[in-house]
Image (cartoon, rainbow, N blue to C red):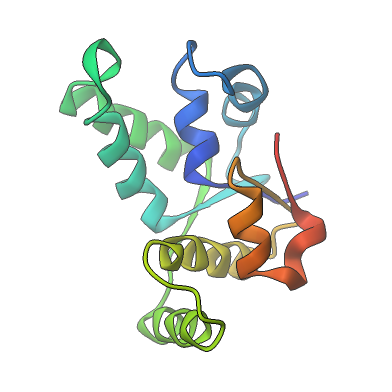
Length: 141
């Protein structure tokens, strides 16, 4: 079974004090490239979030980079082509999704490309609104 992990799940899986750590961590710990995928953009999002967390939760850039390396080793990283980016943006505009929701739309395009059977996210409402056709596959860990 191919599962797709959203950035929100991967961030939670990296911090034992995160409220969603316990259900998120096993998804990363058990991930293999054959069973688990994430979007290429998730690598940058994860690095960005981990390296700018408030206070003592902030990871040093080198450590955040090592965590990204771990993701690359444990998952299939799904990139989008220029045409796939353009299609996702066009579809977002057509559906009146604005602002940062485009990043969710791009990740959902990656999940489609990976033929994900389950899409794990802590952002259920926005994901289901962006991709109602995938709503039954979009769940929390």
